[in-house]
Image (cartoon, rainbow, N blue to C red; front, side):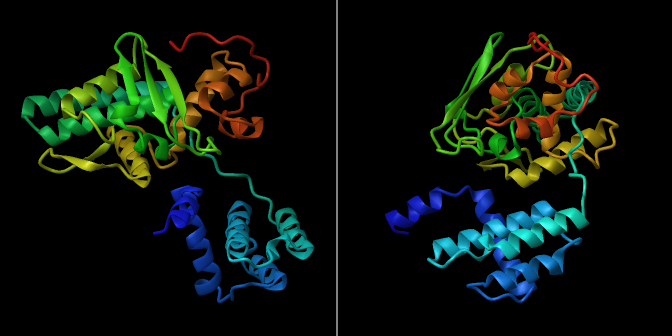
Amino acid sequence: MSDLDRYLNAATRDNTRRSYRAAIEHFEVSWGGFLPATSDSVARYLVAHAGVLAVNTLKLRLSALAQWHTSQGFPDPTKAPVVRKVLKGIRAVHPAQEKQAEPLQLKHLEQVVASLEVEAIEAGKAQDQARWLRAKRDTALILLGFWRGFRSDELCRLSIEHVQAVPGAGVSLYLPRSKSDRDNLGKTYQTPALLRLCPVQAYSEWLSASALVRGPVFRGIDRWGNVGEQGLHPNSVIPLLRQALERAGIAAEHYTSHSLRRGFATWAHRNGWDLKSLMSYVGWSDMKSAMRYVEATPFLGMTLATPALI
């Protein structure tokens, strides 16, 4: 790969690249479209999938087609008035409420952490190294994900070299890049230590248990209790979370990795955080993004102060 290709490749997030690749394949292979495309063929593609695919999915497909055409030096057919008008019509004829992940409520956070603590104790007594390590890892991942409001890909890209934890004080986490860091400048996030459900303590216990000193924070663990070299894949966070919830006696089918982020946002709002403070803490740059994560309450917008976490 040339330096030019390497830098062009780095300009797009891996998740976005995979989504765009799948979208182009769907247009060409599944639907039978041709590239470069005309505005008429793009409009017909939208019509063919109206009411079948969500509007947000169709918009992502348009973004992928636009990116392909501009990167190849062709005119962008998705900007044509007919395409925009068809999409507007689809939105009007097929209105659909956006599906949101169930926010993880504090009581359920307490329940799943308590369950994992019991698992760790039982595994320790049974000398089940794999189960013991997984309980420690999952506790740290869930508590950091909740209190920091991280996405699954952010949790999976955490590196030990970029984390500084001070027991009883807090933890500093540096991410070289993230979805909200459009210019890839890197950002440091702070999370305080808490009296209970403490992410700092859970992180420290996981590192002590795993004996990890560098590389990815969260990794796979095999049946014999060996910790892998590679970080967890973001897609593994949803089954990990759901399995932990189910073992704790919580119906988990409506929970996703976004449940941690939504759970924290909902908790913070209900405990008096104003929207500006919440946006600053989590890293949202626009109010619309923040509002999608806050579970609606009758008193939305009426809170003023920002109390301590717990």
